[in-house]
Amino acid sequence: MSATISGIGISHGIAIGKVHRLEWGEVEVRETSIPEESVEDEIARFRHAVGTARQQLKAIRNSIPENTAADIIDFIDTHLLMLEDTLLTAAPVELIRARRCNAEWALKSQRDALAQVFDEMDDPYLRTRKDDVDHIVTRLQRILLGENAHTDPQNDDQLRGAVVVAHDLTPAETVLLHHQGIAGFVTESGGPLSHTAILARSLGLPAIVGTHVTPQQVHDGDAVILDGARGVLLTGFDDTTLEEYRHRQHQQQTRRSELQRLKDKPAVTLDGTRIHLLANVELHEDVLAARSAGAEGIGLYRSECLFMNRSDIPGEDEQLQQYLSAIEALKGLPITIRTLDLGSDKECGAEPPSEHLSPNPALGLRAIRLCLKHADLFRPQLRAILRASGKGPVSMMIPMLSSAQELSEVLMLIDEVKDELHREHLAFDRNMPIGGMIEVPAAALSAGLFARKLDFLSIGTNDLIQYTLAIDRIDDEVTYLYDPLHPAVLRLIKMVIDAGRQYDVPVSMCGEMAGDPRYSRLLLGMGLSDFSVPPTALLEVKNVIHKSRMTQLTPVVNDILHNDDPAKISQLLVKLNEI
Ligand code: PEP
Ligand code: MG
Image (cartoon, rainbow, N blue to C red; front, side, top):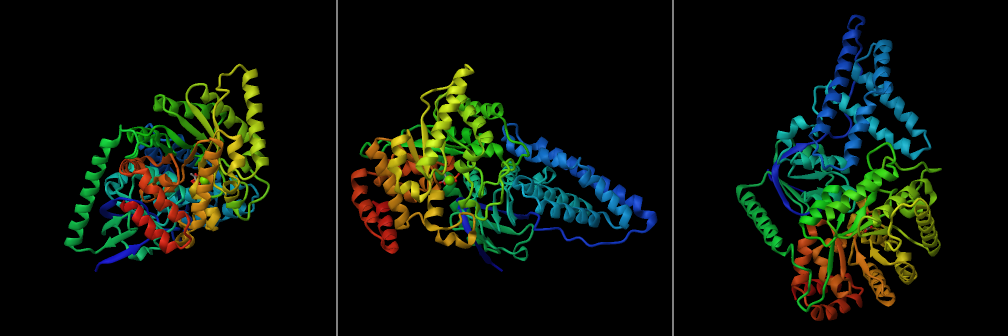
């Protein structure tokens, strides 16, 4: 019987394949008592499972290509280290002996005891370690129960070409699965602006999130069609539907190769307006993808990715090496490194301790707020970025600015660090451009204030929309309210572009809106000339630019900006895109 499961399409493209379900929630474990004479056998069974888990993790580590981001490898190394920890290896053995229970139950009891300790900790970093314990315990439980962990390399053959269905995926798991050749993925939870979603778009993986699909609705091996643009997963379809989708998939592939012809052409409108098209990157491999898509540089380098999935904070030298390798790969093209945007949905293992857990992390100590509070974290990064500026065309960008006071503090700190480097005779570019992200409504409304003191501004629509419309960007319950065309959002964007004009400061946009070709003409007509987009979206946006004439866009865009009726705005957008 055919069925359609709907969700939020977060990464376009069609994937046709067999379902491969990943671990769904917790493993169910029951207590069984073990006779005295079998206790040592049970302990041996447990130790064997630990050995197998170790081998599995090592195999995953070895299967990852060399150019994979260090954060992904560190994530696996952390788990390997935890398998050496007596709390996870010796303590369950003691429990098996003392309670004469099965290994699964001993492991569960130890996990619950550890979870309680973690829950009582004030330190948010240590609390995140609880997830790591859960990952390891689940892996061991599955081995004991004779189930496989599906993201392991021995399942490569099953994963290749599969449509993965999971409750949720971390960014690290998404990268691993991509390397293992999956065709696309569907998750029960998640929103369009989560890090995993942004990564899926970067990797060009068709994906749907927030499906609220129950485990009963899809089974391993079911043939499915994933339509990322429409946000649907089809099961039990007939041959006609399959043919139709195969045809559409083929058309999309043809279109992608046709767009390749634009790769080396400059982004210019029909009436000669030159637009700058740069790329957003998260992982080192995105830098290569950006180059092969013909990006003019990197407009947003999300530096926090180096801090993800690891238990330590990368030092100045490690950060510098990372930036230098990006600079080298870019062969002279410019790069804008954004300073750490940790906190809120950016779950980074190395987050520094804060005094208390924020009741509302998106509005709490995030991004520049967190960095200013933790100079021990911020200074090494400022030093690394500045030192990188001595080796290539680097700009620095500050996320989530909201007040003049904050901006002065950052600029003062940067000056201090420059003096320090100078005293140490370390090379850097004293004139390295410093820009700010406008992603808080207050900053957009007072954009002039920031434009006067900075070298450039970049509009982060992901957060600007989140904060303007008061919708948590990772909560799929409120995704329906996410609307880049909301009149309030459009007016704020326009204010920033106008402030840039007034103070002769370049304004770019690096939020996901910039990479959605449906909005390209609107943004062009609003006066935006610098776009930073996911590498996979670059050629589509360039294609729209090539087919646009500014003189035709301006009047329709003005009508849109003077309207506050959503239906009328949508109608006008259709008209604009049909010119
Ligand atoms: C944004 O908020 O639009 C942005 C580009 O930053 P991030 O998505 O990393 O928060
Ligand atoms: Mg942001």
